[in-house]
Length: 294
Ligand code: NAP
Ligand code: L37
Image (tube, rainbow, N blue to C red; front, top):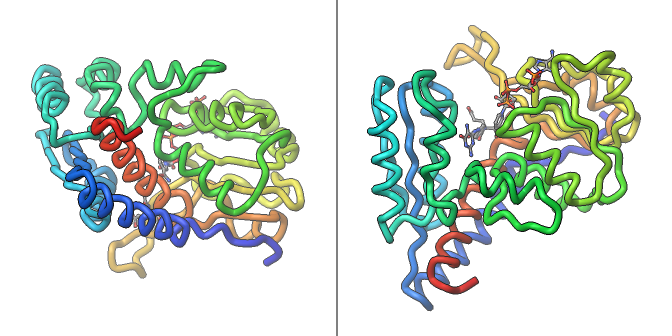
């Protein structure tokens, strides 16, 4: 292996330790306990796992966490009523509605209902709009994209002036991570399912972010020697030898690409844990703002 490993699990742990100290101090000095409400609609197994992990990590750092689960056939009005209730609850500083929502619900209207001061997922249209515009500050950056930037920063890799190629343009990863990289003065290329000759485009990247949801798609000859490769993909592939019957693989063929890249994130243990760490960080920020401490 020539690439150095970017250990997302270890970096996330470091952030959680910082937050644990900060939360203890907030409580001691100001009597403030950050509160996070998670809202899960339906029974998507991956979403259930992530929400459970978010609640567990919240509790570990001292965040008061309250989980709401609504049935898969919940109505638009029921979901929005819950959001409005949480908007009005002073013990809750952050509201996370886990996506995707069941098909019959209007995601845009639900996200729009979240108070922007409590939008710790950063998906409210005002927060996304500010993220996209020059000279504006979003109150929160979306967790996975923010986690990617934090991973790069904490590894000591410069972003400014670099060629960054993002594979994927989704609302939750590809698009917002592109906007964050642009804000940090990288030169951005965004690829998607209609891009011609993907390997030729990705080979230009100094920083390559893969967020497509296609197991092991990025091969060694897609990568410029020495590039920083960030693998966002979390794909379950059948594996009867595992207790749970599947294993997780990224969008990058790690075994091949690690021989070419300069830096690489693993799956699991890369971007995933950072998504949760940034949610906790955003929740603490929300609580500090609500208490007038920021
Ligand atoms: P998504 O909404 O399905 O978007 C996938 C994007 O990839 C789309 O822009 C799509 O293009 C593009 N794409 C799909 N197949 C392609 C192909 N063959 N060639 C080129 N582009 C292609 O997915 P997402 O929500 O962004 O998630 C992407 C991956 O990241 C998934 O594996 C997901 O599980 C994972 N994820 C991880 C975390 C984490 O914390 N680590 C968080 C969120 C998501 P079009 O726009 O043209 O359709
Ligand atoms: N903030 N994140 C936010 N809001 C949403 O609406 N859907 C969504 C979202 N996505 C999300 O939570 N993704 C996610 C993905 C992976 C992890 C956490 C969150 C994660 O921690 N993955 C571990 C492995 C977990 C496992 O064993 O299943 C990892 O090491 O990658």
